[in-house]
Length: 229
Ligand code: 9D3
Image (cartoon, rainbow, N blue to C red; front, top):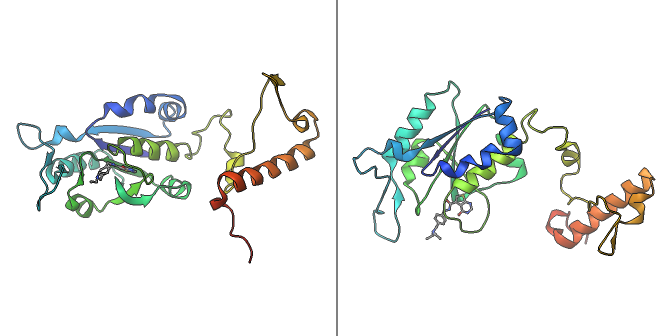
């Protein structure tokens, strides 16, 4: 997969893209991620990328010209037509299901905004989808873009090493995980549940299933099917 990111803050991406699973996936050639600074495509000598909103109101708006120029530049760097995504608070909620859908694309082009938002003609002219990562106010689209990249890349074939298990996640979807324990058996008086030390794999499996249901009912009842009347 090829992923292009258009942003005013490419440096914000460097560390997260250079560690652990994302680092390995890039080094293995599973994903090719390229960062482009929208400011490099500003069309005036002040390198201006934002302007006042028509109709008045607070804040500034991302201008069309630099974003279109950056888009046209990166679009031509690779043969596949990109699935173009604006990170915006009014976007479609990002879910594991949307991550799975995006992971089937040959090419993604993510656009992270700052200020109050994008000139509407950017969405229309670039035929872009919009994604939000949740109902809270952030300072821009950079962290959301990184979250989309992380969730998508780990789904690409070969992206997870043997140590990073995903097999269970796929069939156990819709329930929270069971509690995990590792050595020592007792830590500050807190003991590992006896069943996990029993060596009885059937009992362990039933206990974990039960724990998952209980934890889901306690912490995330919204994930369970509605009660029968
Ligand atoms: C006057 C209203 N504005 C500030 C409260 C709206 C607004 C504009 C731009 C709020 C946040 C932002 C910057 N956020 C993003 O670019 C963003 C975002 C987010 O804030 N929450 C969840 N997902 C996303 S994706 C992009």
